[in-house]
Image 1 (spheres, one colour):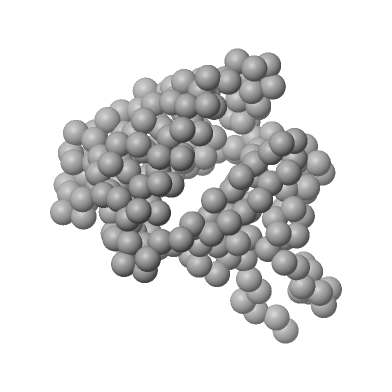
Image 2 (cartoon, one colour):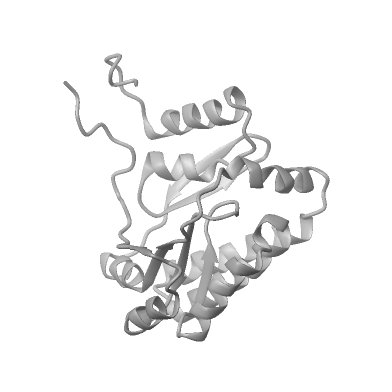
Length: 214
């Protein structure tokens, strides 16, 4: 829209526009990490708080390690669409009431360990185990993630060779992803016939951009 009006927007301002539209104009209970990551592209570290403040920095890894990471990601669509706002409301309420302080602290520690692993080109199995810990923690934070069918998908993936797996987003459906040895990807796919769409995964490094302008 800015390009249509003859102006440009930095990634920072573009992310702030998107956050403002979703949270203030549409009044949706959503986070801010997706808007920031989409605006900047690449592997990013987002530091949030205090209050509404945030900063964004690149996560520096070698090209070889980025490709190594990409080759281990298995991304599949659950076949169930959902509106994130419906499932975020409960979590936001719990956070504001201080009921998730321990879980948020644990999530921060998992993130720090994962960042250290990636910056030091750590092994993917260790990163996958952190992903699994993160999934178990995420399930405790919202009843929207406690549906047995979704948990079963993760359990089957782990049983067939994945080191870790997680339902992305706020819950209720959307995409799953696993970290697994490439040699096990086909085995996992066969074991999960309910996942009908497997999406080739690559990290976009350009971020939001105008691809056509008349």
